[in-house]
Image 1 (tube, helix red, strand yellow):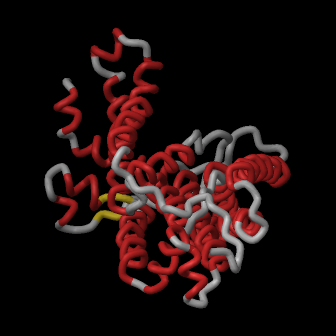
Image 2: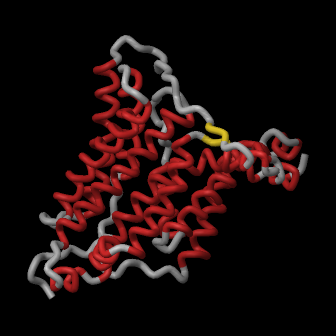
Length: 314
């Protein structure tokens, strides 16, 4: 089986879309934060919190969608902390973001041990099941990949459209983008730059947490340490790859996921027997870096990204 045969398999693209789904949620969240002028490096830890909060809620008897809501609220809580420290207090966004990641990750692991002190293997839950859309799922290759996924995957694609419409077709989206480009103009219109930025960070952090919840409630059915495994950092790169635009960010997430799914399958071919598996594990990241370099050369960074704004400044 050669690489072309793999790329033509419906199962390959089904796996790629599933791998891309948590990246789409988290990357959209990071995009919203950065469009408002705030770099959120707490994304990795917030995804861990979302994964744990959603899973624990369902494990304790809550419904799946209630678990998603709890995950989102937990992410928004950490987003509020991040927003308050970086926007009105003007602390370093790099330091606060990394601090949020360390705090959220360690707090999650502590709560896990506190809630399940005697557990040696992670308990399993009844996760979201694939929902087949009649007729559309019968389309060769594309049908099973796009129309036989879990509800959270469908929600991820719907959110791409929703975020695009809000950012480019609503006054709220205009105000948010202006806060990341020219906050003085926003203040001149009588709007609060601080409120817009804090709100954007909270909403973005909530989406990051839902991306984490996808891992425990859709991709897998349990929570285990290190399951986020650097996906948050990948999402930051995806936002740059997508030039801070939702559609291009979606494309970047699917591209990275395709690289990841491809390396798993290539390892099972005769080619994989002759090459150390570590090379295949590195391949998606190397290819993504190359794509990032090519795409980001023409990207326009939000002018006020990581630039503190104090009321009354011009």
